Image (tube, rainbow, N blue to C red):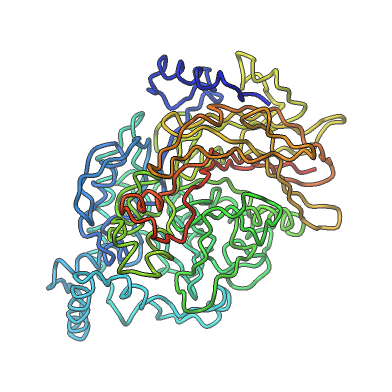
Length: 637
């Protein structure tokens, strides 16, 4: 174990003085290029502005893409709900404003432009006028959420069941589409991205959300690209009103990539409420996964979202009962809560999906779930706020502490309010801060997620790697062909090869120290059964190992009267050279790293302290252990 001891804090202070935190490369990564000529960039790929229908109906009447980019860059902006001045603590390096493709800008236009009815017949004009009155009443009395959920698809147990009786006229009958409004809105969004894009300094990537939700199963995808506004304005964003099958989205991405000359990817998000359908062993039509399907899906969906405001999607205590840290920011609510109580399924969670992928590789010949992971917010405020002590909620109406303890009752403490997580961030090892380099990093899966803190992590996997390699001045280039970075794959092993990982983790320079570094392994045995194991491989403190080899909790330094955390415990950096003690060259496996912070105050505790009412029950823990999840490294015989 390295990086645990009293000198760590002194070292971190010295590094702060020398570097001034001017670079996105932290002290533990002291070489100039940090990771084979790559730099660590921080961003959010999933943010909604006032042009998303659900954002607008929930009180975001003002925060445009321009607001979002300004906030991400560190510029003060006005909050769309309570109207106070707000400012991000640490600016981002990149941002994707990903408004819903469906009815893009239409709800906002109906509210602000009552006479907007271009291209509509007289019946549609009358109905549109009626809907305008409904919208104005609902939004003005802050009941827009009820209006929005009332028009969602009829609930069903899973996506496949829902699709079996899917109404082909699913998007008509409530609000007629208004193509002119959608085209104008798309131009506004893409022009804003180009204005704020500053290669080498800040990347404003163009994207949107494909919001498929059959039977209430969340199968949304974020689509993002490296193109500019001129190319983007040659098409309209593809939504579920164009097709309710992800395979049609992938086919559209193929043709649009060719027509624009750009690169695209689709990012599955918030899989924890997909009713088992996001990473199922069958496709949405109910068919078994074939080699062709697996190949296409793996290409277009190289990364997935593992953590966001609507909870954490790494794993669940039901699925990983031996993992002491599996019950983290669990979000036990479907979008439509009236159908049933929440039931976690393997198709909902990333770790289970990685295991399923090993099984599908054995049966179909290709692993459709060989993806990297990122975090993002899914905030609908136009503000990418993942900082626990500077969290602005999911919706514009969800950012005032007093609203979370009173009027909204169960909703405020459940699906909204304190039930939401201040999460997450996408960390990208990119050659430079440009649209093209960021998308290229995502395609090769050299990315990872955090739940908010800027925890820097670098991982290499390969054969017979040793701790001395970390001290080589030429590292990581010195490992050469013996190792691959996170997101990579190793095929076959020469005789005597021992699978091993080199891991470096650095605490957020503005945040809490680290508790431990863990390796999560999943594998498939000769009988086709999948397994998982969690290994503690580095930790802060020398006296935490019990006689039976267990690692004791790190403790807590949170002041429960102020919510402040002391770095009197933990480590500023942790490193490890870990060899798999159970490596079997005949078994396919994956390995990813999880880095845990020491406990810090959750935003719900900070709200409770602000309200000065110790009797408030937030229904959430007062402290949490924030974390980072890396993309996996795969081994196959």
